Length: 225
Image 1 (cartoon, one colour):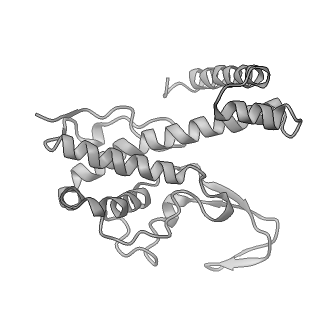
Image 2 (cartoon, helix red, strand yellow):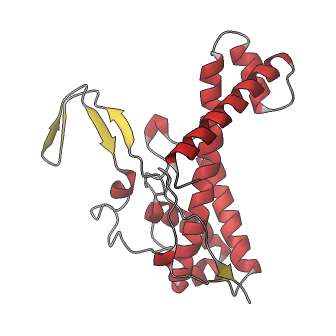
């Protein structure tokens, strides 16, 4: 389905309908969950419409799952291809948080571009933008800016990757970034601790990419014995 736009759209419409019906039901029959809070505190009070609430829940579901689900196998590939940069955090757990930041910078799985509007006239690299002009920020390009990160195409788990834009910037940063960091740190450290002989059984260039604005692979064949 990932390669069929019509099927993908059909699935998205079905998911939207399911979530809309769920929010509507929770408005009248709440449970102990975030959707019920949204339904009773926002929809029922008129602060948000049913369609607006459905859009919020859909965004949280997709952004909270699809990004990490794609990032994790890409991180595994990157580390298995760079054994020295896997051995370091595997030998010293305190290096995992920094390794995760570097992987986020190095991989930058969001490839759709962040759309913003210039609020005042500004000139960047000789390009003049006026207030009101639309701007698309390519996060993956910014995260490999050689003036910020020396040798930016190289993975270096000891690099200070602070300031990367994998989660966006400013007020519009990803609200789930703390959870994503924890999932990656705990998941990667546990995986490589429990399966020290983990290896890929297919060449990286042979892996099929997912058809999505979130960069990833459809499958990752591995073995550990």
